[in-house]
Amino acid sequence: MSDREKRMVVLHGPNLDLLGERPVEHYGTITLATLERLVAREAQRWGWTCLCLQTNHEGTYIEYLHEYRREDALLVNPGAWTHYSYAIRDALELVDCPVAEVHLSDISSREDWRRHSVISSVVNFTVCGKGPEGYLEAVRRVIELAEAL
Ligand code: DQA
Image (cartoon, rainbow, N blue to C red; front, side, top):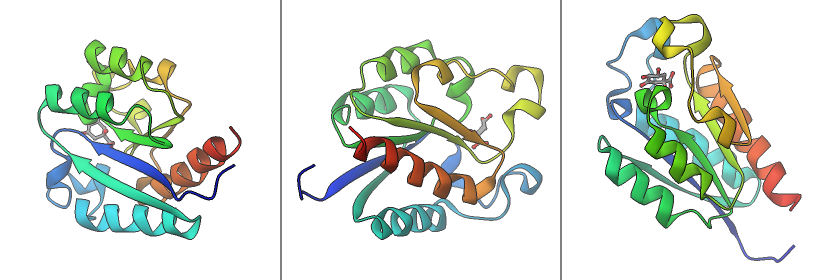
């Protein structure tokens, strides 16, 4: 492994910019800015840097996946696109690094339409229902995978 500082890109999808205002029972009170700070701090503990991006536009999200497909690792929370965007699924298939899928809420115990993730089969692992702590777990696990390559 080289000594170059490794970088993780964290991609948040629609409505996650309004974390802190969304239903507390699913998302808690954390804002996106605070969540991103926690994620970046965890990555730094392992000597990694972090680039955090959020968009409400599916095409932009896909272009981020193209642009960052050769990063050292990705952490994605595509919000509601998780449940139906085959375009995001196809873009994830082209990613050439370990990918963690993370959801703050437990999508498996919510509405029927939310229970299925169309991206789970093309990522390395999924963490959901653990709130911000789940992000930190995902950061550690995806770093472990990337460093084992
Ligand atoms: C989410 C779960 C999705 O179902 C929802 O549409 C979101 C957030 C989560 O983090 O729990 O926007 O991805």
